[in-house]
Length: 121
Image 1: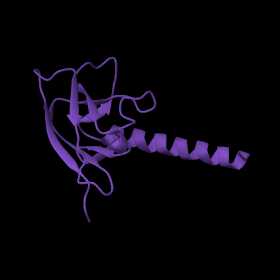
Image 2: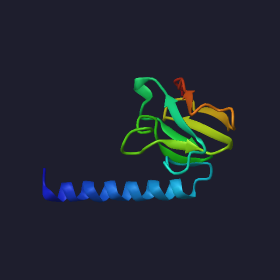
Image 3: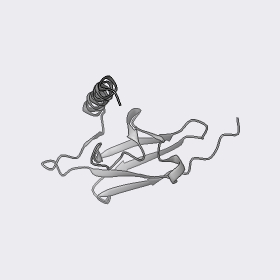
């Protein structure tokens, strides 16, 4: 592997990380886990292994792939109190959309099971 390739990979990784941080900073209703702020619940997406690369959106904002949610690299997505639209998308599959309402009775973790059916077109 050439040094230029390694440098390019590092630049891409930093660009991706900065972009994700900006999206999470402006995305209403979702934020990375903050140990000082216990309000909200963790979001977990349960998909088939073949669909682990599906994109996840919360309230219209991209938050990562189903595989990356909850990993050390991305962290846990916290849903703040209120209603949220969670969407899971993958090319060639029908998207899955769910409304999640977070209130005092919501468990610490919300698990959304997304069965992404193949789009015959």
